[in-house]
Image (tube, rainbow, N blue to C red):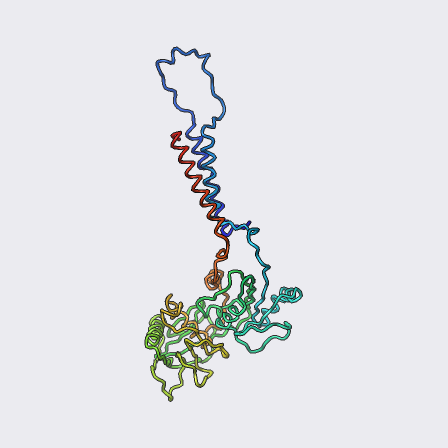
Length: 397
């Protein structure tokens, strides 16, 4: 038997409450003089000693009520009632040398056991040898999600081997199967010199020591920066959407970014061939991809091939995209902005709280469990409560 919410069994400790109440009602009362007692001889009066267990059945019923309620809330699952197939372990690995060195023993052991191992890619690639690591591949959230979707099947345990840094949070969340394990490694040997942007009026945009995007007239003296900005002047943005609602939604998100971080965007709503854009947000396939431009292409179910082109498989409107409906679109665009200009040179590891919030399971682990067990317990609880009330009313206890 397995309990899906085992901590609820602590509620069974409340069984002491009816016991305490029971004995409290039987404590020695105050002696009251009564006229007829003078006819009774003292020798005929017997002293009662010890504990008198009146209404013992009622006490047992009340204790059972508390125990059954705690057991019901702990969501028991009797495994022998269900013929569960064997769970297959699948390992999904980020092709990074530091990560492989950290988990070499676990991965080599999995290979000996014949468990499938894949490199993270939009189409996961089977690992033939840990020494033959793909080169020049940037793992981003969309690539990771595509790999997880391709390998997530029923009765599998997905083991994820990832570098723990801020790049994991470029997406608002990562959906994982109900049965998964995270193996994270934080690389402390990251770059220490950071990039920054210089906007009009001498404003500097950079990531401060608390890993927050900041706009100021002066750089933080506690952090080493590059000698020259990676970009000067306003951020040139092209919004080229055929859907007017999507155009309006993305424009509102950019305005929110501009207001919060004092960013200076110069936004065009029609392409200008004379402009070299820093950021293009569109629902059209780019005809030409420039390395210095960040592309966000919505409504295109396509596998990413370069790190500066981000595809979303749904339009960026509240009716279709959860990221818009939840109000996280400005935050997500801000993370893409930081990554594109490499402002986060120090890739700080995510905290446990951030990791728990980032990885969301796609199914409730007890969704496929039989409901008969919980229904029987609920029926037993009702019956016990009914019998307890019937006896209590009869005995006025």
